[in-house]
Length: 486
Image (cartoon, rainbow, N blue to C red):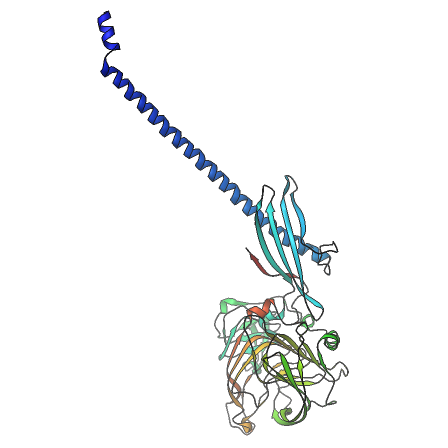
């Protein structure tokens, strides 16, 4: 190459322009690459940070749940200690460790014992957890720790039973005997027997051996048998203890009426949280047949009030809504607050009083603030002169007798036939229940019926986890009956 040509290339403007363009392109692509790389690195960093945040958030909820499990264990060993063994107020912090990896995080416990009538019925536990790697991310879980109550069921019956085709049931239905289920049910039906003898009183004539649950009712896929029996002796209450608590913190009515079931107390619940109390001095009778003695013939029921004396208006204590009467009692009205009413005679063990559901029983609110548990040492009964369309709310427990309406024949028309009975709550009965009868004879012709034509039962979901004071339990084992996370 000549010097002339070399110089022409060096000082050629077009060649220098091309080199400039290439440099600019290199710089542009380098800038784009660096920007993309920086964005990608930033994205990876953010994703990695988000991943660790999600991981620590998940760890926090698991650590919080570990706090609930810890206090469940603690209460099983120290059932009366609600201060985490410290003797002081909370919250109570605990380090949560991995046996192989060391400290993972911390949970903090807030413990609230729920008491009514100076008796603990549940424990509320709030557990807040966080991971050691990021204490700023905290999660909370809430658990209510208690023994399961009878309010979880629509029915608990200690003997065989027949639910008719005009009976609608929403809620768990359990019998320690056999079940003929011809009604409509929307929940689990359980029987503790594999088979049983269905007699004519259950619609089987002649007597036949039947499976634990049978019938033409709906929901047969929810029928379960045999299942573990519910210990009926275990769900009966300590009446002596309840009497003492009522005398100390609640309302107590002393024995009245002697050995007769013709007298007692009439309690009318008021929507202002009080009761009007009357002493029943005279009653009239109606002839009836009882479901626990169907072969025993006609009996006299002294359930109709003729005369009574007003004895006072009583304020129901808000911290112990317990009313105990050592006599037969009639109840009706509107419940304000959580109330338990008991009819039992501790002074004379030969007398076992009934509770008579004189009229409708309602609540002032339906958010769980109000509730009724009615416990009779013998039976909980609906009398002859009951409302045509009756509505009752509450947990009704017949400790040694039965829940029901006795057979009142055509002599008492129109009261022999009633239209509808709606129960919102639970029925616990030692003997089979019955609120509708089919019968012949008695001077009434053939194919007669007595009682309520339509029966609807709905368990109260709110009372299942927060029942009235001293409501009986179905098990002595504590468990979490409510759980929720933030």
